[in-house]
Length: 119
Image 1 (cartoon, rainbow, N blue to C red):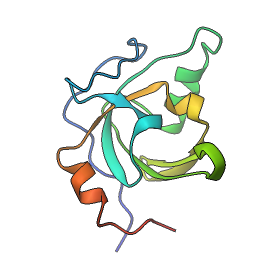
Image 2 (cartoon, helix red, strand yellow; image 1 turned 90 degrees about the vertical axis):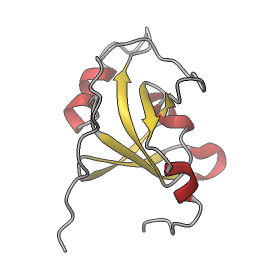
Image 3 (cartoon, rainbow, N blue to C red; image 1 turned 30 degrees about the vertical axis):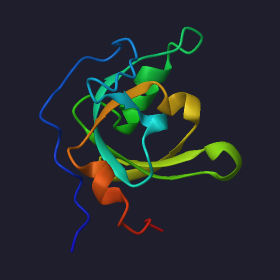
Image 4 (cartoon, one colour; image 1 turned 90 degrees about the horizontal axis):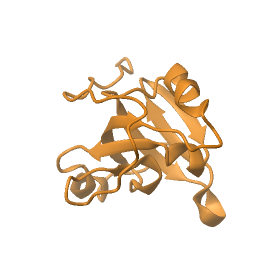
């Protein structure tokens, strides 16, 4: 079976929206996503000292509307993060992942408990 990228998420918000971690809205940043949970990218923002990060992340496929999955965290503090987007796997620093606001897919956290990590 071929490895096809997951479908795009239904909502397509803007790049450079201010980051939010509102539990009320069910939105959080990629660095806070539990391992093996898929989410929809909602927005990408840049820290003041790294204005080039949104464009660099977008060139890798991290764009609003794409599905992203946190595969695993690095040892000793969780850096780097191994993530999958648009059919590709990348290692991101936690600071980069914190720029990516996501909405977990419905039921994703519940399903993550029974899944084996990808190798």
